[in-house]
Length: 220
Ligand code: ADP
Ligand code: TYD
Image: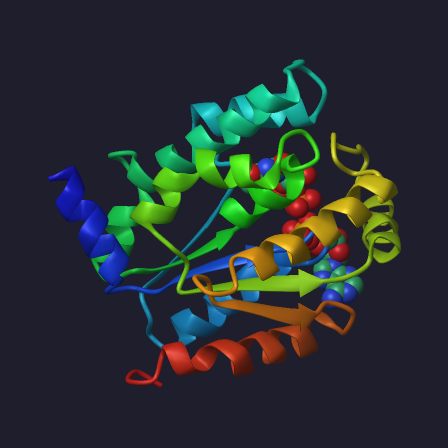
């Protein structure tokens, strides 16, 4: 049963689009804009995010806010566990949604782990602890919104009353480079689109749509 679910999710009746980028890059804005566009085109569509709002994700948010302490390696494993729960939980697991024909758009997926945790352990090890998720559901496409760490910090400081664990300029600059290292490492098995995140939200949404629309050919 579990195997059947995994195989049919990989066959992807619905599409699975993962948004990636450093904190403040505009992911959640673009998830909303793409979801709206797909819904307007009568495509059954579900927007979600990691860390999730389920128990493991909620615990992770407490670590990110500094309310709980955890060794960075524990944090990396918790993110991998939250991701598996995101895929497989009985209530609203996204693997079942995709195999049932829903297009799922997620704000962050396993490339976030590769980029954020490879300062604490080798990237290959981070990739290994996420192997289950890779087997269950690979994104149809990963959209990386690229901005530099200075711009990200400006946006974060302008718009938030608190800063989280990874929201320091030097860390964000390192994470951005890690993303590119991971994209290069996995270029033969993953479809990755890099968009310039410096325009207006509407301009970026157009670039994303131009790059993704061929995945929705029959219905548009
Ligand atoms: P993320 O989900 O990557 O952290 P958000 O979409 O929450 O990013 O955007 C971070 C902040 O920057 C928000 O306050 C948002 O309104 C603003 N923002 C989003 N996109 C842009 C953009 N293209 N230009 C300027 N500001 C933006
Ligand atoms: P998020 O709430 O998406 O913040 P933002 O909207 O600013 O991007 O992400 C929370 C933080 O969690 C972010 O700093 C990245 C981090 N993170 C990891 O470290 N590993 C992971 O696997 C994921 C999914 C997120």
